[in-house]
Length: 327
Image (tube, rainbow, N blue to C red):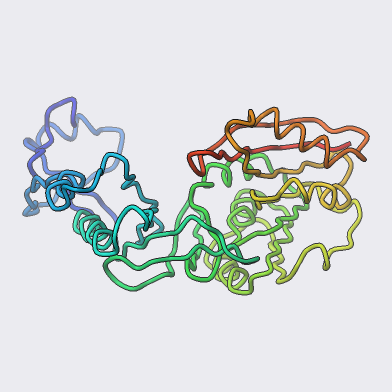
């Protein structure tokens, strides 16, 4: 329809439960153009598009003394909540609240804007959350690749920037695998794996609120696999030698330290997937290989299946994503 110049760009499309209606110039051309897909015509009073000033320009006018070029206004959207990462040392609370108001005004889908301090606290791995605008809500349903994840931002760990990794790992799971998901948080890896394959997953986290969120998600999704969730410290609970086909360690601050423990629980030929923060100046790929060698010195042999320098987690650190096969 775009190529045929049939779209009215000064009008907004309308989305209903089952359809998206596009404002068009000539409906007579549509049947031939869309002969291979289902569609319907309906008359609507389409709203006009209002040209809103970009957020950055609005802020520059309201707060000219702040260097906005050095402040990131990118945010993660979790369901109906937007999560910013504005440094309190660079902006006052009133300025951060104004940023939240402007973001909220640009989206009909958002109900709340929150700010996350990028410092993890405690064994539960919680980020301090600051309310900025909209409704005071911290819980929402988030969707990734058709998987519904219940998120409790105030009380349980969840990282939306691992969506691609959740999907990548799930796509490599074979039917019948037994999987251990350490530090599962709200169970993102477990849910993705169980959604795509008839496997058995043991998901462990020390935070009862995280496990409660996972239980809600298990009920919400149509899963092929089975997820057994456990509250507690896996090192004290599990005594299963050579039991799992795959182990996931999502504790990037110190995942490598758990490699010897995971190796004892892994079947011969099994796979360990883990994530580790590395300083950029240390040559991340070379550094991670040294850490692996040090922590798996007792293993006869292992094979690197996947090593990739992933996202930046700060100006000085990156996350390295690793798959290892142990023999």
